[in-house]
Structure formats: structure tokens, C-alpha cells
Length: 232
Image (cartoon, rainbow, N blue to C red):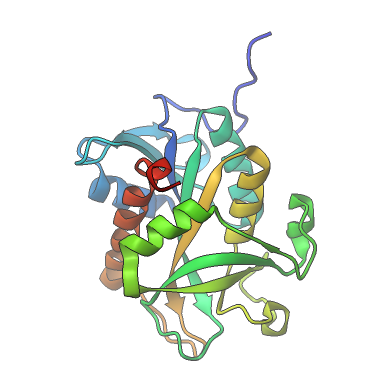
């Protein structure tokens, strides 16, 4: 019996074992142009733009949009697993809960905190945390150095999340918990690096500044994904 094809992605080219995941399709195009020498669109089904190519170092890489919210990211990740993806780094944005965090700062997720809602469908109860792949985390830490602060990320189904439910988490987003939990279930090594797009007091990062921060995270993710077993 032939293997089941993915239900959401309709790849037009083979995918790489290493993938960078972004929520926004526009960011997937931005990073494809930034990180690959000759990127080719590998998926456009459902508006989930994906690109595959090789970095300047010659490493095969896929950059795939996951849509909005944890459930969408989890579904896309399941398709990517069927298509041969083995390692993934989420490059996304978040809202700060820590008043010391300002827009444009980079955060390395050392854990993702479930706040209820759809987290239960990934087997994670409210208040529980999921850890990223330790090898990818250390490689991201090495690439980003002091530019990224390590912290727990609380994931909500909407960005109107209750700060009280976030506990000691430094920031919140909508996808990191889903990515890490689903990746663990699928046998994919995964990690996340996030850009503070909005501070606790409402100051926002937009335009070119946000694109520059995304490109910086993308470069670090691509290097962290290349041969991570070398430090395992």
C-alpha cells in the first residue's frame, strides 16, 4: 500500500531534512531570498508558501509557512514529517510579558508553557511545559550569543492571553508549544527563536526593523540546522 500523501501541503519539489518554520507566508519568502542561493517554491497550496534550495554553504534547506495559530502549525508539521523533514526551527514573533524586554530583542525558547485550549490536543495540560531539542538549542545559543535571551514562552490560542496564566514566562506567542509538542510526537528535533514584536506597554516593532531581525534569526537557524549531530 503506497504511503499516504500529506493532506495540506502539495509539494512541487522534494523537501530538505532541515526546515525553518514561520507563521507568515511573506516571511517565508523573505527568508528564502535571504538564506538560499536559488530558492524554488516547493508549496503554495492553501497559501502556505514553502521554498526549498541550498544555502551559500551548500546545505539543503526548506522554509515553510505554517499559518496562524498552534493547530495550523501542528497540521503543517505532520505533513512535513511525511515529506522527510527531520529537524526544524521556528522563527517567529512574540509579545513580551517581562517589562524589561523591548521590541527587537531576540528570545531563545528553553521551554514552551501550555496555557490550556488546544494544548490538550497535543497531550499537554495547562501549566505543563515542553522542552526543545537540546542540541538545536545549544547550536542556536552558539550562533546568537548574547544577542538572544533564554526564556520560557507561553503559548495561547489567541494573543489576548491572560498574563496570569503565563506564570514566569517572559513572553507569549501562538505556536511554539504546538511546534515543540507535535515535533516530539513525530520524532522531529525542534527548537524556536523568537523576535519580541510588541512590548508589555504596547510598543511595536514593524517594517524594516522586523525584517532585519527575522533575517538575523533565520541565518542563525540555518547554521544551527546544518549537521547538528556534530555536537550531539
